[in-house]
Image (cartoon, rainbow, N blue to C red; front, top):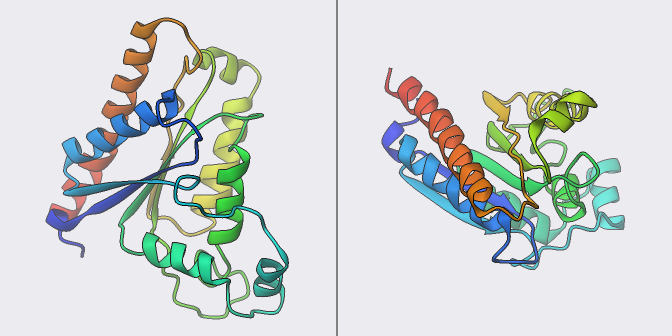
Length: 209
């Protein structure tokens, strides 16, 4: 069992604006994970790191013919393997992940690393705790009313985390990403921090049991 004193998490974003609501919310999630008991939390912005999210011919060959994954993908996988949990913070684009993050998932979460759909017996090395913090432009009621929240849960929690056999996962919808009211932004950051702290505390308490 993992020593709860050594739990590490990475907060992943892909946003071109370092002063965005996404960035401030990611910082709040990182604070929450630390407050809940994780001993180390790193921030990782896919765009700032220069990762190419375009799924190309080499990625297709790795999937279809089981050739080696591209070097930049393998480097990203090795980076993620250092962590016990991944928290993805993103603005909702068309009821899902923005393009760079979707491409990051498509390229990095590969067969025989994140999942085994052919009974190959591969030892899956991807972290088994995945959490998603989508930021809506408006309040939560809009996303519930039209079924968008259910759709995001189906795609990210059921379709990604659970398909990978995640030990723990969850999606925590946050709102008012495009509000002009600074109080609403502060409220969203507080909600993000509290949600992350609760997730961390649950895992830390379980590891200590």
